[in-house]
Length: 430
Image 1 (cartoon, rainbow, N blue to C red):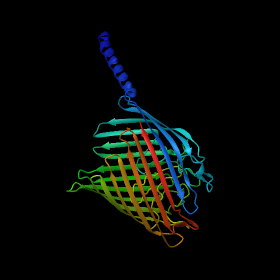
Image 2: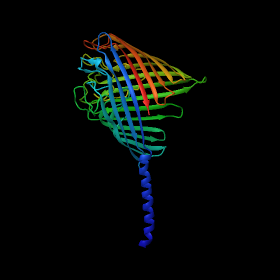
Image 3: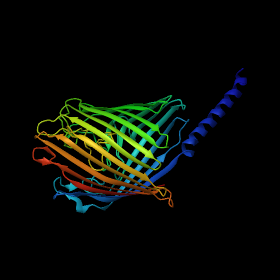
Image 4: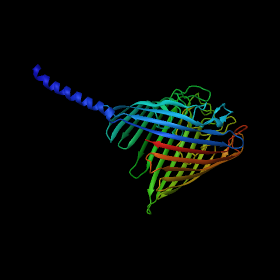
């Protein structure tokens, strides 16, 4: 009896070993290494004698993506590095550092770092599946967000999960440290006065119906600091002449969430007393490769002490929050002061040769100043992108904008600065 059982056991062992070997080989065979080299030039011209800021940098991002062991578990990592090309002329005496506008660190130095290092997993099939990342990773879940608009992107330390059930998508994330876009090491989330914010939890739910209507709910909770909720509704209509009309509505609310909140943002800027709300409605009409766009927005953010309320949406110093409102977001400033009514207009065209041009104008009025009276602001600018057809992976982008304000005294004796800004990017992906 014993001898008869040896053969099937041996066969089973060989099959299992072969399967394990094949599965482990997938970890390497399905792996990939990709990267991007980015050169950035950024110059902020502070008008009326205000300090200039900016820098020129060269950055490199190398991404390793593994395959999956047993089609379930893998590991990814990214390395980031920045080389300063120029920044010394942008010394900011007010804050005693080289203000590179987040391209370099506070001393204007080069740096490199392990940008990502996380375990990943996936389970299920196309109709019902679950995936996760645990470790140092780029996370965009709920109102937990990041930044990829400088030399290198930011990352978080935490867990990011994603569930998909027959078209219903649910994401939940937990983070307790952040790796900023302009620092070499991890940073704790803290208030402007340096008090520790232990963690941030964010979640989102989104679903697209058969008729094209999509609904998305997002939230974020910074422990004992602030919390936020956002609801986004979108719908697209195909018109008889081949054109398309897209309609979008947003509602966002942020509130104090404990004893750490004092009304001040993470970097010491204006926030709100207890609560802030923003409403945004915009439409986009597209025909062929051209489009026009328009939006209306309104913000209510409670004034406090002598400070004009502002809809603060980050989750502390060194952290980032999502701000998904086209009307209120701009190339230089976000328009979300207390009582502010915003009108936004835009137009764009995508050429066959790889060039696309986008223009945007915004005007905000009726800002209810804490020091008394009303104020206004406006911004307009152009965003041009070009993908080189002759060199795969090579692209460039130029953004230029002008910002002006009228009487925007955001606290006693302090007025917002007029400025103009230019950003030039040259990217090569490989």
